[in-house]
Image (tube, rainbow, N blue to C red; front, side, top):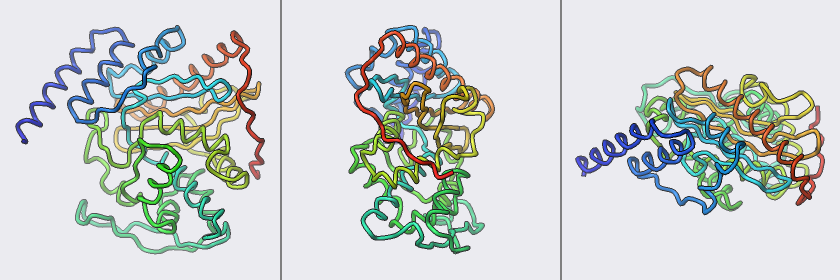
Length: 344
């Protein structure tokens, strides 16, 4: 069995290396297939997958998401027209802290059900120094108690891990968040560890060359999650205001999605970072009233700064490309999102 797995790995890796001589668009497509064959992570391709490079817009995104120095996954949806663009959109990537949006949404649903309130208090869950992999879960201790609304704020805006684990413990653990996402129709999404354990175990695999199904999602799934949250499909208007408001005040990731987006647009987003991987997902609200759901996951590329530069470039190309499409097509909007008050 081990020999067969090693053989599959070697075969897939050789195939992946061979794709480097291909054009960028073909290289991205073939590299996905070779990784999937090597690591047993085959996912069903959407029927429209082969058409996503049919224009200069799609070609530009494919070039920016060139996987030569590490896997890059992109999914974006123009919420006015429903048009999508994907690069490795159905391949799993480490969510890192981008999963915190789903943690907040799960808790807010429980507030709507009357199980908690935004003033309910929970203790920060502080990691305790321990030997790596010495236990299935990293040990934590209780810290300061904080109201849920404040835990959500620092979890999203500052990516606080102790705050995230406080809310994960409150809702019943990672599996409850996964179940919430599945109930919303977000299938390729799984949270398996609390953040303390995820951080402790970080570095076990190289995400540029290895696909770990734990704590992972596809870019398509995350773009769908963002779209549903923004449209109000999953949560009440008040819960939507709380979550999107916090995302609009995010202070992490200044060199990522927000870096090159014009000042007249508004970005509400959540970043993620782990060993050899950087990500950013969010909503870009355009001056003309359209909104774009964007999920970008970058691995490898040499340095964190290089990954962030790639995220920023892809985000701006998506913004420009969808704006050009809107001007050319003058589409009729499918829906209008209710405005939300960010609360500051």
